[in-house]
Image (cartoon, rainbow, N blue to C red; front, side, top):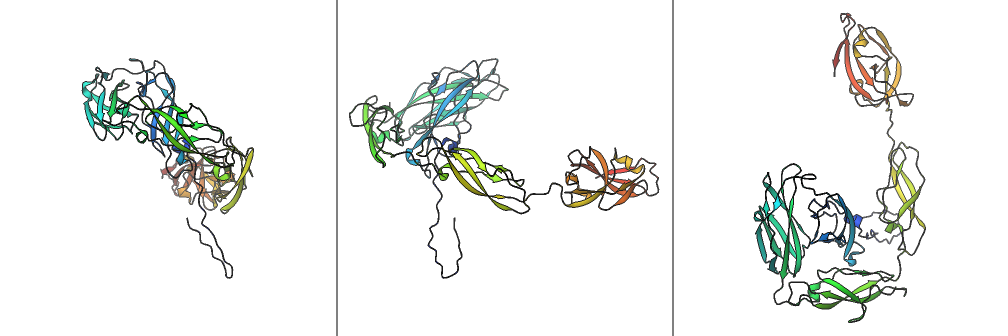
Length: 487
């Protein structure tokens, strides 16, 4: 953004370019999409607008090996998606955000909710590979049996992409290690193209070995986590299991830290006991790793910048759309509406926002925004026409002589292009009751023996529903039936 200001000498300006406030990363900003559970209990990998998925977990007792058990009735599931916080957000140093989503798992009743489809054939044995790019390929056709239709393909769900990557080529799945050791489960499902057929799912247990390597704090790679002003601790992210938090090395286990009432932010070192995961020479042993966190002094002051109003606008009718905001709730706004204007006009609107919990101030604050109200577009238009009395059908127009003398206004640019436009009388849409009316740009007479003219069919809202060209031969030879030609 650049700003150019012209001033007349001898005035001098010393200005600094304003910078936009850094937004806070929230679950709404991440915008988790396409998170589903199929009939076999397999979770799909969701899409995000921002951040990446670090893990997907659930406290549901039916959640095991990174999938849910099948259910005979549709079942609501609570899923926690841990999302990394990307750079550019004010809370990026926290590292991640846990977002809870409720997803319905459909019922699996063979022959009822689905029928036929592939079935499993035995089970896929556990796989062990080494770190740093070792891989294994499994032919899935040996572990699934087709139903009445051939197997059309396979889908995979990999809950730990930091540990391994997985891909499908034809009927083969290839699993490749990354740079760390550990264990995970990969779910793979077979499907066909039949109508409402069942899928079948196999679980593959994968261990990544780090030969002759002991798990240490470098491998633990603690990232994120936080301590709130009141002492609430959010554990950092790691692929190991954290079993205890301590305020001192080798000290007693704690669940929270003391509140920070010092008046300024402070650095706090916490110590974590981690269980070394499988794949390392010291698997199962406990190691202690520390990390430093900044504990804020007190809750921040809620401001209009934090509220982050967006999407507010004013319609041409003067109606205010309150839009959305990132934090807080819009409890009122003033004024409530504006009169219509003939030119685009800047309007000042004050939004009253209720302050959410977690901030040093409470109650409400007023946030002012300048919005542009666009000029109103006349509903009735400015084009003048004249109409006849109503006619039941176009052919009635050639049975007599009719006066076309009642003035109307319309948005139509000509009598020939009125279809879809609005016809008005007395500054309001004309109730045409779906009758036909002869329309002319000047007062005239139409009907038997007058030649060609146009008819509009106008509905009860004043909308022109049809336009026809009528020809009443000047010699009167039509016999009163009319010769109607539709545009």
